[in-house]
Image (cartoon, rainbow over all chains, first blue to last red; front, side, top):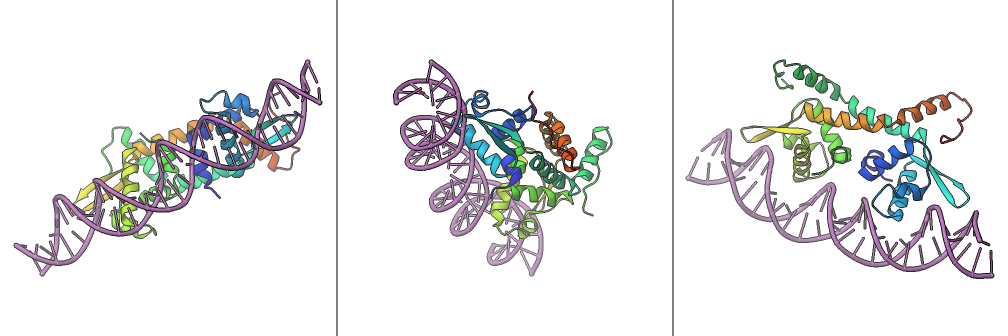
Length: 109
Length: 109
DNA sequence: CCGATACGTTAGCCATTGCTAACGTATTTT
DNA sequence: AAAATACGTTAGCAATGGCTAACGTATCGG
């Protein structure tokens, strides 16, 4: 059972998700937008399906892949949880710092 | 030159970033919170530093690692770019769907 | 000066990953 | 019925990744 974030982070799969965002699409036309083989894309899609980010609707000899909203929400949540680990405090420092303020002293007194 | 999102997505490194969010920390105390060796953690930290997410402040025989706000902002941006690819439309459907509304017809008319 | 501490570094190992090529299968076309 | 299309599946490969163990190197304490 692969890690959701890791699966989604891989560059080819990120692009696949982005492409599917504009609507469902069959495998071959998807694969044509990449430089790797159709088989490679198929395997990426199966992995994305395994973690519940996409699903396939079979119609004739085509399999139309589309995003699974619930899965994408789970991904969004995971990302949110990551950022929520007080990282925002740090980033707040960054913007303050970007506004030509003196650098804040090291945390952890 | 490794991919920023992929580097940040790996579970151990995610946790490292989260731990560093609460303040700078030396390698050994960091490593003690994991089950893997100190060497493994050191290598993860070096990789995180390579992509600009963390940096080390040397003091005596310790190396205090901390988040690099600019790097974390770049990461945040990358994530935002990913979600911005019209994925939000899909997610909007999801919430609507979660409110017991009939499923929206397949996109791509 | 010597041992201990805190690291980075390296080599080597094993598992995983992403890939291609070839094949199998269902569906459509002719 | 045969060829073509659109897939998934499998095997097998090269590369990568994460890990440990061992070592090298500063720095600190005695």
